[in-house]
Image (cartoon, rainbow, N blue to C red):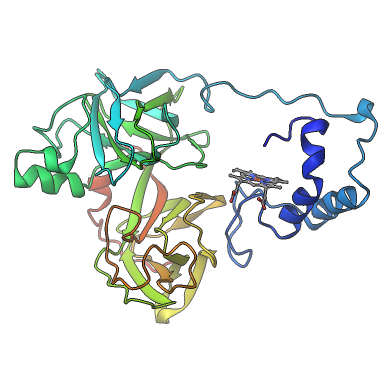
Length: 384
Ligand code: HEM
């Protein structure tokens, strides 16, 4: 439904007031206990009261003279006009039903020099079937998926060697960006950018889901280059636990993971990811003596809203800081999204299996890449 004109909006007045009052809309899942986020769309109590009063008064039109000017919607890209667009050279054809294993597409950039990317956006040609897409940066020295076909979609099963099949599942390559329905494109603040080194490839990982009709998709990725060399390089890191076993019928199974930040970094944003049994998620700093500082708490995780949470004020973290992610899963039959409460659930790609990933973005010195960032520089200072 569109809410662009009075005529379009009026029939939904009651539903709008209810969605706002219950805070179902606009969608946002961070507990106000912890952190302030630049992309928090929550309405203020007085804004909710205005919507309710309007619905109670039978949704009057008001004076057309006071109406705001029609909003200008961007056609196509939501980022600025991209400097470069890379599109899958051939479409992926999908069957009408069944699971589709993750697809990979290697897109050579042909970049002759290093490129700093300040904005990026993934645009599926068919949004109905793209459950998520991850764009990885494969620098020229990387052995990851070397020998896999270039420019045409493949899955791990299509690959010739055990090593390549294993490669498909796991990489240390830096993530350029992640797409899921409703997610925002990446747009880094002035002075921040992601680096695509000269000669890199973009490797798209695509999770397709079927919808009862044969379909095809030819996803693109658009890049806007920074106008000058940035002061900070953005890296996407993750806190992942892939060795859990969620018992059948368990309504509240806890999975946690922690890691020590190897070097100083500026914390920018979070992107928690679980599947249909995901119940809650939080990111913490574990300070000396076990004191916990919660950075983001999602008390009611909803798989259908894959949101990122961008800190209003980036947080400087010292090397040696212990970061922790804690997830809970609801494998009971009270979870309306649960595909099978009787199964024991482990890590897996498809949504009927589970994941526990706390992605987070940090900014570091522009000369440091992800591999170098993980070489501890001998600092063991306390967390802030
Ligand atoms: C103040 C802002 C907003 C208002 C008043 C609003 C209003 C509504 C209403 C009345 C519904 C139907 C609710 C229902 O079925 O119970 C709805 C559903 C929906 N809205 Fe919003 N909305 C807002 C912001 C947003 C934003 C920012 C997004 C996207 C990022 C969004 C995406 C959706 C989607 C995808 C649905 C369908 C959800 C479902 O079927 O579960 N809305 N919204």
